[in-house]
Image 1 (cartoon, rainbow, N blue to C red):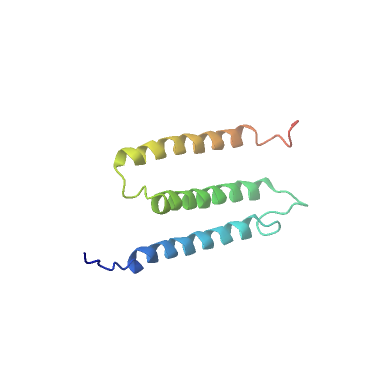
Image 2: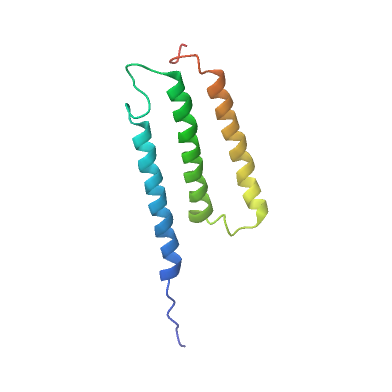
Length: 111
């Protein structure tokens, strides 16, 4: 029985590219969240927090979507599986945003 050799060079290249993009996004997130870049812990400014949180949310949604679509292979699956992932993800994200807005005036566990 003859065996054919299959090259996976092309298929792994996209994963390395996605991995590099995810690493760059992670580095950007860490730099932005580092104290003193956008906000100062000594002089907290609400405007800086209102800028930082949406930026970090968008970056984390982009990273999560890339991981799900490429590494969990959801990109090639039927649309019903994509809907089964996207609907709860959207619900959870909107709930987090609502809770952040509701409790933005409270500090710590006791408030």
